[in-house]
Length: 462
Ligand code: NAD
Image (cartoon, rainbow, N blue to C red; front, side, top):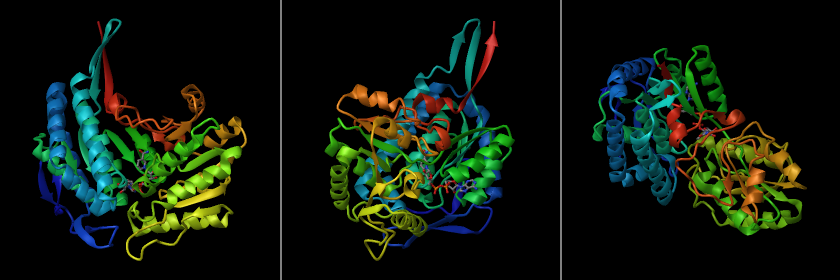
């Protein structure tokens, strides 16, 4: 893994406009592993011009040819799978096995799904006496977070390219090496120059310049609700399309008829996975009062087994943020069952897997997104209260429901104000629409719904 000193623009690595750089740090040992250029508005300007110049040719490329290029991109990602996993592990700190299975495996699956969709999607349809064309929106500005570095990139770039759009990507400053590796893969797959462009840099500089650029037609952002609100405002003022994938505080609702041990164990694993840095993590576990203490005991035992094997969080800043939430939980009267604010290791940005019981719905740790390995267990008296608690945050990204009968879980899930619900531990589906209700966002990613975000319609009447 080597860091590039330039930006990937117009099909080549070009020197950055300025001399500033960003240090990339390994969260396990706090060592600097590389430096990438800190892009400015000038770099963003060059990249947007390259994307604009490439747009007519790519938009006019037959979908089958776009599909073939995406299949080639998927094949390069497959060939470089180990390198991807090692790079994500080096800059995010996740255990190598998890990086191989999830950080490399899922984007390969998603890239493959868009290679197929580009070939089969109905870009043209008949509606009465009209023919409706689904045409690319244009130049896309994609801004991504660090928590799933390659997945977040592929979940935007693959559907945008399938739709016939061209892209400028501004990846997270904590994980730019994975983004550079992706740009290498794009070049190796033979995508035409300018179809995909990469500008590394800081959010308030390069990210903001991209979100505000007048020649970007659509901004697709994944990250915090605070930044998303601002980007949505900018896009609204410019009457520009915007997709926002934001934060979450999802509920794992265990109904009394469920297999309690299974629901608790899968629930704890879900929260600890990726060191709790998953926007859709089920960080609130809702348990009926009759099973509450048993569930707390099971969750404590499950969480204690993880120790420091889950890996660190991404940065010192993230570690202090997570610790301060744990301290707040204690201060507000929640019962600390496992873990706590102390680091389990002297070196590295590690946080102990932490479980709180006696969490009430109004506590800060039950309302705000922590983005660390912290689970809050909340008691409910009856189903109505469970629905009220589950829906009682500003977020609505994901969730889970467990019951003996699927129909009972489905009936409950239909009452949740949230974009995705796993029934009795349902499997990940790369074609299912992913995105939020309420302040968890606007728009959907993945599958055909994700593709349609990058299309606009034109109807011809006959
Ligand atoms: P963040 O909002 O700080 O940063 C996300 C991206 O936005 C980064 O690339 C950053 O450089 C850029 N950015 C920051 N300020 C900007 C500005 N003023 N203008 C333009 N771009 C700017 O979020 P983060 O800390 O990197 O990621 C964690 C957050 O992301 C969590 O809240 C999490 O829930 C959310 N997230 C959501 C999803 C989802 O699909 N809904 C997925 C992953 C992460």
